Length: 415
Image (cartoon, rainbow, N blue to C red):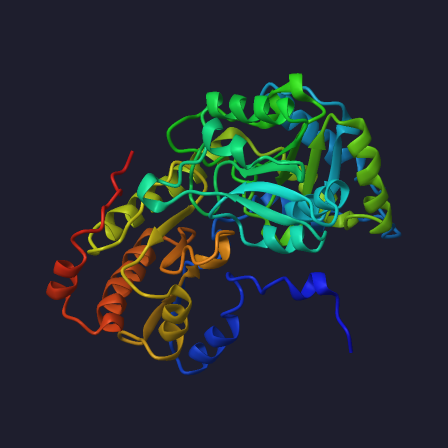
């Protein structure tokens, strides 16, 4: 049987591909600390479940392809509250932020097209882009520079006749990098100057630890035809399983093209939309408490990682991930070893190997992403396990390991 050349260029998700190994490890009685997947353990607001319980329509019908009016209005009001005025027609409800991203790619990319994305990036971008026959042109970064990328001099030379868009995750997944207003303006100006789309994946907008101001590329109305924003309830409301997101743009032609895909997939589930509309009634106290919890977890992870010799990372300013280079040879091999061979007092951990998050060949082999979505005391234990595992994996006493890695620069100071 023949399969699509496009699907054969895609890979399994590095966040999920070790699941079978984890299942086998748990069958053997191992306890696993999951730092590999961005699944928050924060309670979903009660308003969501109350809406589900209160659903009493006699027929569970298709929702409108753009989304139900109640949810669209809730999203519109959310943006108005952060100073961004949108028309309801400029919001399309999607099956999570992932579908919003996929729809955008299908609307703007053809075979051999290119999209600029700073690396390391959310690895599922690869699948979305490759299924369109296009490719990612990476904007290079490195852990020693804190994964900084927002410089016009670094990005503009990468633009060519095949470039269709620039896409950034802000705050960053997997790096936790947060763009300043000036950096966002630079990207907007660059996209406008070269007639490119600028896609802002803003799933983690609420989780910025050095500021209380919420930023969005949708603020830059002067480039309305260039800017596309992808949003979701998944992280903001700890409602990943609802699979409800949205695509926001003032570009009327793009909205018209996207509607073809929306109608093809019929609709987003009706009940989930009704429940998610109620999520937007949650007050600011909820976000303040959640943000402080993640800040505490971040600081715990930063403190513990700084105690392991040879780890290179920078304190993230947003989202709930740290990208770090470990003093090991290959993170993929290391993760498999953690599940198959390593344990300490019956416990081990899962990380996400970093190489699939790079577009540049042979980069990121010893890097990992860690999600601080578990409680502080569990993070403490997980990183203690990591320190023990690195020492055992490398087959050297900690003292020798420390001496051999002193040349590696550490960038771990909490902001």
